[in-house]
Length: 412
Image 1 (cartoon, one colour):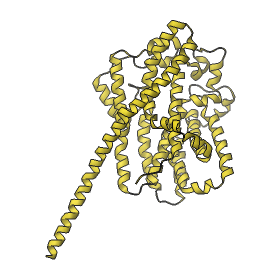
Image 2 (image 1 turned 90 degrees about the vertical axis):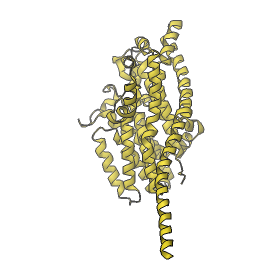
Image 3 (image 1 turned 120 degrees about the vertical axis):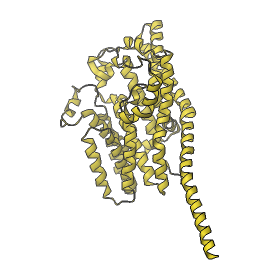
Image 4 (image 1 turned 180 degrees about the vertical axis):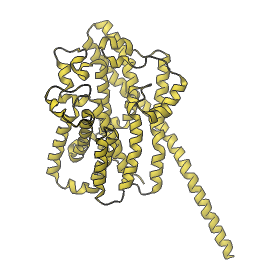
């Protein structure tokens, strides 16, 4: 049975992927806008340091948009589970999850492996110009085929924090584990009464108290359950939805801009006083991501904007963008910066020209990666899943035919 998609969720996923790209651009090429005064600045005055702890940083806090990415995954999984009509759909969806995530990562890692051996990464020289220690950390050593296989198939998903082939891979173990947690939580709530809401709230609070990225998935399930069970009643109060949605988005902008690299010293210092067991930026960013999703759900005009074709296109290739952008920023972008600086001697002019070209390259390469890798991987996975399911169906059919024959023989 074809399930209706919530289109604005796809658009939000696409926006999140672009903001993660912007975040990594800032970390690599304008480090003071991420680390504050302790990093090398390239713009006049204290513009970068002030940006790093202002609400404008909302658009460049990668940790926040990773939270949104994970929460949306939990939301979508739950929505699908709530609308499944057959147990086989649940089994098939679970079966496909690991290869659906892993095969594109393996393909991207193989590309990076070749690039490493062809010396196509220029982040070392570029880091000397930008002053970013982060930019200098990766792609310094060649890897082996064994590294490629075990990193792509096991370490990235089980051990976690794997950054051998991309710095963006650090959260994929959480994405993998959180996906399965979302399936289980959603299955628990399917067909249950409204009191299941308290169970989901309890799970979300417990995970939030442990500074776990799995909190995003618990919150995603919670929001999906609210939309499923209480959505019609909520949407009847249109004015309240608009006011509440705007309040949630504005609050998300403030909380989501809480800096990651250091404790803020401006007005944000009033948010520093959490219990010692809580990581401030994890906590605030997870809450902000939940407010973003719930706020968009309540604000229909904003949901309609995110459902426009350009945003849906970004959503379609969002996983490819997430995988592709780091190798591009460390190879093409770094090379362009060194070349432009040699020609112009102007860092800011060189960096922003480089960024414009890099964004275009990332979008084109991500689209190609989606067409050539993601789509073909999906077709392969669907065929494999069909074969596994078909085998069971065939056995049951053969058993049924055999039983019918036996019954007919008994009649004779």
